[in-house]
Length: 584
Image (cartoon, rainbow, N blue to C red; front, side):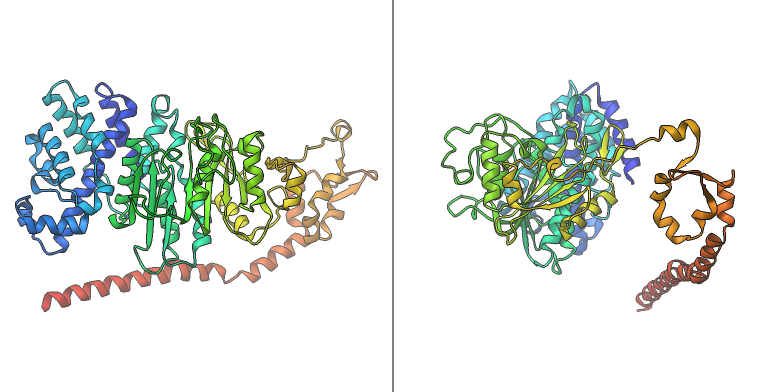
């Protein structure tokens, strides 16, 4: 099922459910049932791979202690036959809302003790909301059944080229923007921004074979998932990435855990915490916080922008005491300093923040100064406005390091690279690549990227506002009023095509005749035909066709013939292997 088909079905169902539940609550129900189906299908897949016959699936009961223990240790949970999603579907009209309640309660009770952090309470939002599906058990059953049958065909495996939970979540936020999207930018990082950050982090960590990633405001978990996918391309051994996630809102925290589990990440590699990042410092080297704060290879976050926070008695908090306290009305730097505190000396940190952190005064200027003087700020990337749900403000990505050899700061103005997508702007693949290439090469690019010395930043009184360092404005177009009124082509405009005239050296003098020192005119009324028939142009086309004469057959052989031939060989090899097994 592709994205368009999935979106159509989700929207149709949402409209049918509007009379029963609030639009912005709909996502909690559908995402909860989707996750339950994933866990149920995953358990069945595991059992069949271990040799269980499909006809024997009914023996998977709580009374079978050996099977329960096996599933708990290997999957982290146990779902009995009567509570499997496939059993619900098979029961058809016999399913009752009480079956769903009992199944969710049994799931919580039978979580493996070592994986309670991953699974415990993960269905609390769904469990608590079942009563809202109708006034009676009958109407609740009908609504739950409608949702169950809706999602039975939604893809749950890792073969999808998109994040199913994240896509559904983003789609619903977009469709219900009036009710649910007001603060959506605080806990959903659009896929394109996630990919951008992921590629930067992955390139930095590409030589490591075991890494840890932490998102201090994890939201849907999409940022962690994308980083894991990008980094895993360079890691030879599987399951060598540890994921740490902290999230304040309980339903969103549950979504983080669901998303990580659904991407096939082992429970042992998922370490999560439901808490206030600024009030509740985490993670530590052990969960009981008896050891030192944990330092990680990559720390990323997209925290809520410029929110209030309680800075009372935080002066001696080790996260802030060397840099200063963020103002009470703007917690942006409080989030940044928390992330920096948990960054390993050889790690990389990326945080999404509003532009104001670059130039606001007061306490924020003092923190900014300390970050510069401690050589922590590595790069600032200015993003286009209106790329996050729920806010049209311009944002930046700040890349921060604990230890650097260089003392300069790279500043990139990527605000003009986007495509319009409905009400929002969207980074294209070419925009992402241009940013990532500029970061990797750390080069000066006119009107786009500049590496700025610490001395220059000091001279600007630690103001990091991007236009101070990178002038990306387009030159004002100058119109020649005389030419518009009296005719003629300004020579200054003709000279702008210098590379063109270098390629066709005789074309300019044959195409134009000078009227004065500043103006010329065309020798023909049909310039297009004149250019096509010009000797320089015909010679260029002949030379091009001669050089690339064998390119078309080369492409045909490489892209069509060889691929078809390879697939035909695979087909016959597969058939031969199947026949061999049959005769054996």
